[in-house]
Image (cartoon, rainbow, N blue to C red):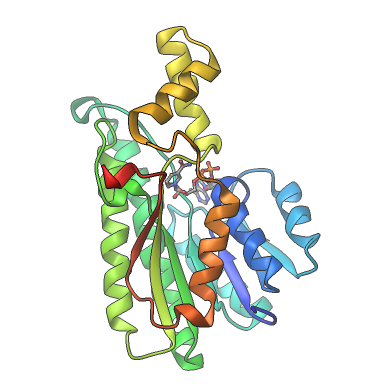
Length: 256
Ligand code: NAD
């Protein structure tokens, strides 16, 4: 379905981003990866699917590096057809204790980076009259949790950005939608499990059960593979007129 097209997935060296990159590669898309994780392993996993793989080390908190990445993608592949804004970090603390530098980093990486990639990708997408922008938000783009002020603000912000992008492209072949996962067992969430183990002196299994039990009625993690399939749907012809949605895949979290 995506043969000859190019996908750029930010923060794709692990977790959800890598899962989405692989799902798009299975549809034939060439992929530009980004992120600070195990780069060679991630490249090998995507290349094994028979597509061209490239990597750019842009720090998503730095607009000049984002511009450089977008130029590199255009130089290498012609243009970016599928843009997945996925890079994200977390920090957990009450507002009055929240480190200012963590607030700034979360807003920059989880929200502003998507503005920069989107503004730089749109002209070529509009010229081609085809494009897909998929923003990885979160259930925290729809509802809040205590101690996650920056994350919740950024994720609500990216849902808003998704809607504006969808409106500004509504009469074109470019669509923009958001994915809102509940808990996914990636390094970002394992850190929160580890914090419970340390704070409560409980096992990893018990901490995982409590984490799920607080929020996710299904008591199951959503997987990067499932999220990858949702991204593939957004890229499919059936989704040509799906515009500006924030689609949760969350085990019933937001239904409560
Ligand atoms: P992860 O830690 O496995 O992956 C994050 C990726 O972002 C990594 O590749 C990392 O290297 C990269 N990254 C971090 N800072 C970066 C920077 N400054 N510049 C470039 N890349 C950077 O985490 P994940 O759970 O896969 O998270 C991916 C996205 O999914 C995030 O936006 C996160 O908020 C969102 N999300 C995660 C969950 C979950 O339960 N894991 C739930 C909802 C939403």
